[in-house]
Amino acid sequence: MSRVMRFCMIIFIVILFFGTWLLGSFIVIQIDSEQFIHDKQFKVLQKQNQELQRNVDKQCRLINKKELVRDDLSGDKYDNKKDAHKAWERARKEKVIRDNLIYFPHLNQMWCLVPKAASTSWSKAIVDRLNFESTNIFIDSSANYSLQVILKQNFGNINRTAFVNAAQSDKIKKVLLIRHPFSRIASAYRDKLADRKAKVDGMHFFQQFGVKINRRFRQSRKDVKQKEPTFQEFVDYLIETKPLDMNEHWQPISLMCGLCHVHYDHIIAMENLEKTKVFHLNQLGFPGNNFPVENKNSGTYSSQELFRNISNSRKVRLLDKYQEDFRLFQYSFLKHYYI
Image (cartoon, rainbow, N blue to C red; front, side, top):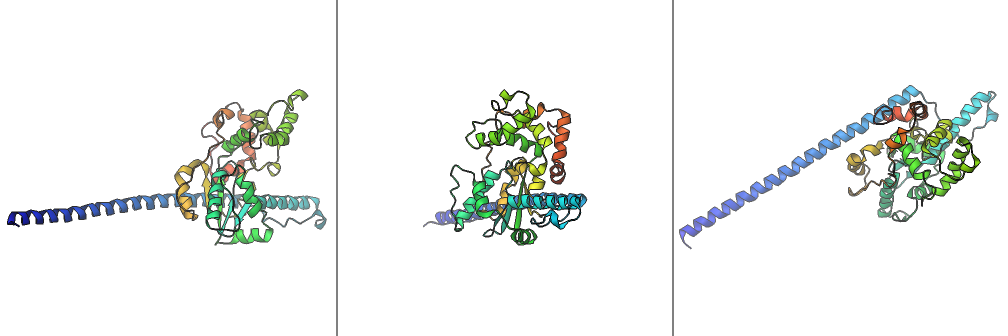
């Protein structure tokens, strides 16, 4: 081999070595950069979640909620009927909370899967994880039925002892889904009351609530069973209904999930879910980042269009029913289309 060829080969090896080192350094820098961005985003999301938790705690102190009581209290134990009624009402509230919480001992998690707040998407994620971790119950996440109902049947109906222990335990993560009250109301109307022919629950909700609403707000008997309630009639119905008597699809989240009685570690807002889902999936131990957010109930009319025909006086009265949701979750009443 000539000296020239040996020299060229040495130069080639040096260039190859230097190029490989340079490429490796670039990849490391790129990975470090991505990790830095990821860590920074993680800290931002963590801070936002903590700020929301602190606001909930602060508002609960201002509200000064009384401690919930056992649900077997009866008026016979009180001389004062007013005190007996208050105790009975607190017992009802506790029952509402326990009925809406789902406790997963295998995951060390307790969820309040709020309807109309991406609960279907999260239910699928939970079911897939339960099946993956080989619990005694297998649930088909692709089946055409309500996964929330199945989860409640298998992991709901928490007794008071389990509820208190889970609520007070630092080892069990408590997870809450939230959504702007008015947006959730509009979604519930579109999905449950706007069309009695809807495949899922359409006729059931029309018979349970639609006819009742029509009977209350319509003069003609002919119209009671012939047409679905209008959105304004639904709003009037909500204004006249006590929150404790509302259906879970439009009941205030603060009531149904016991915001001032359960300290939630993760408060997941539907409005920010596309940005925060990876953070929450990782923090809660869910494998992978694939989490499609379903929006099956977008409907023909948007929330803005539905509320456009509602008078400001009605909106203010509706706000009064959901004021704790607005206050606890820092939702704006004036923002967008509501006033």
